[in-house]
Length: 231
Image (tube, rainbow, N blue to C red; front, side):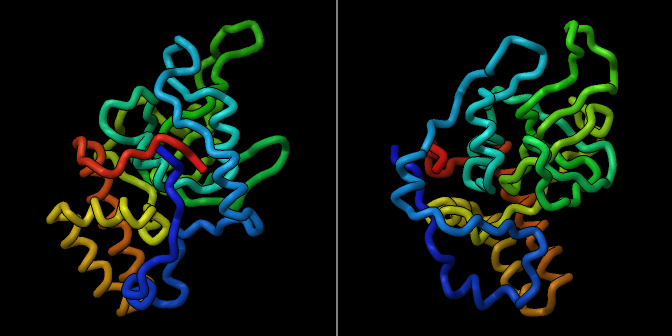
């Protein structure tokens, strides 16, 4: 299957969201032509990179995954039955993605937020593990990566799992259409459209509630178009 191509959001979505109401949106880097993205598309992995207690994707895939925001890929990786190790944020915090000495824009994580561990640095040079001394790179429901210390997340739920706000308008159109076939998601979508005409705070709250409903649907095995490649 070819990598999905993101299209412009429908006019109705653009009109429903007021200026400045996109606090969780992730800007795309400029410059890459669609042809270039297609040429560098990679298959989504299906198996752990190693046999340790934490199941992470291959490092080469993670490097590309964390270089940009991939919300469609997040839905595919968080779906029911995938092998990746989940982790849960222990408290409200700010984090960023650290790679090769560079840092991304800081992002706010909420208590209980569910993430996927994509890089595990909890073992020392000798292979001896010192509890709390390591770190992880984790992948969020909004399609972005951040780096956290081992003690900042738990490998089991600390409360009802929460999510990062999913950037609805950046999901591939066929994915949005499939999600809205679920009655509860469709209702939340309509509530979001109404709320986003009333200001940023109400819009942000409605976006989060829609994201929670989408996550519930995906965790329960809800069907969306198959995403097998990452552009």
